[in-house]
Amino acid sequence: MLRRVLGTLAGIVLAVVITSLWEMTAHYLMPPPPTRLDVAPGAPTLALVIVGYGVATFLGALTAARLARVDWAALIVGGLMAASVIALVVMMPHPLWFLALSLAVVGVGSTLAQWTSQRMSGGSAPLSSVVE
Image: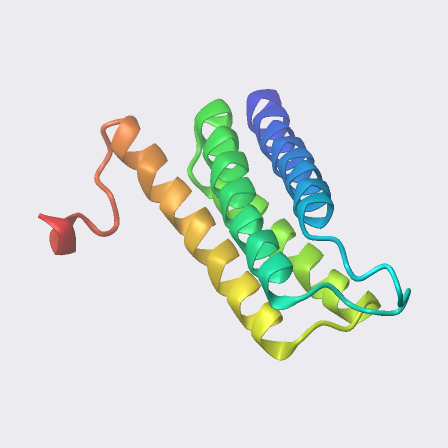
């Protein structure tokens, strides 16, 4: 039980750290114009942030699933990442496409991490009949 809790927490922490570092880098590389303080980041910056959500979700979910030795730990990380995206959009308005793509990428990242974890442990993957 302790392994499951700590493994899931490790995946969550990794996902949060990767997301934070990725967003800081994206906003550093493509800052908003200096003339207006109320300008939201542009589409290239937001697209880079979405990629970061996918990478962070995948790596955090895979870490959680592998350390906890249960595949549902990946879905917990994915669910919390999706909740953080929704909270971000509620707190600071973003375009609708940002919300939709972010949630899609987070869902794909956690599902892919769960599938990868199952394949690494030798279990049957949920998509094995489709892939093979």
